[in-house]
Length: 273
Image (cartoon, rainbow, N blue to C red; front, side, top):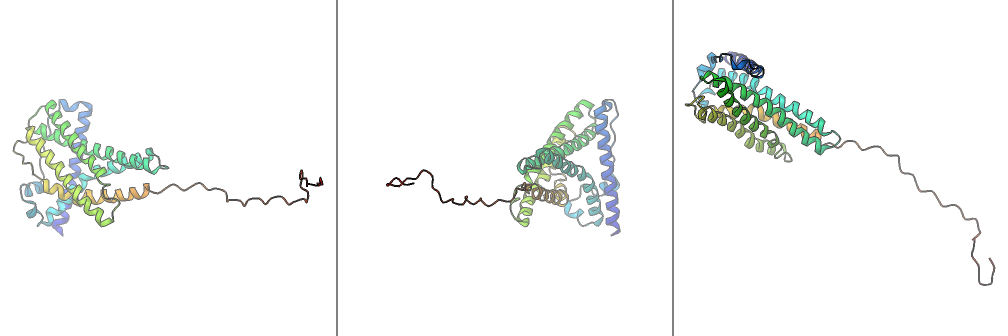
């Protein structure tokens, strides 16, 4: 228990530090300070170095690694999930709460924009830091970062509408369908980043499958349950029709006026009326 809890603490601390570095990098890029600033050196923490290069199955035997993995992965996944939720809510409001179809479309588009933008910015900042640390100048590192940001942002944005596949099925079937979709998306995202790092010369020795199993595991533990649950709640909320306007109760038809005993304009053959 102690190893697990200490691992969680280290993981959360590592995740918060990484987010802070990403925010600082984005700020320096926005202000132009990154052009002349010296590249920041990234020093992995002790636990990251301890488990670096080990197979996932071996890592999973350690409670300390589980704590570290959950703490760091959860912290660094929070911005994407928060951006997707915020974008989805804003999109639904813009789409119009009185029209379920447009509200649903607005929620999906908004979640794609919010989550994809946040993930893209995180990927951009992280790749810029790594590229600069590899010895590249600002312009080359920025090119690497833009490619990486667009790639990871697009992949993560695509996971949003994919979350609606199988929604009409039962909860268990829907969960199984989403496991078959979302978990590979996490692996594809990591593999794409590895390819960019290798082909762009950031890390020529990087293996395409490096950290892919960990990325898929993180997707299964964090993104999949939260995203699938949020999608089901959103679909349920947006599918409710607005209450119909109350109409006055129908009134019974009025009875015909009573007969007066006189028929006007009717003549008999003998001329009488």
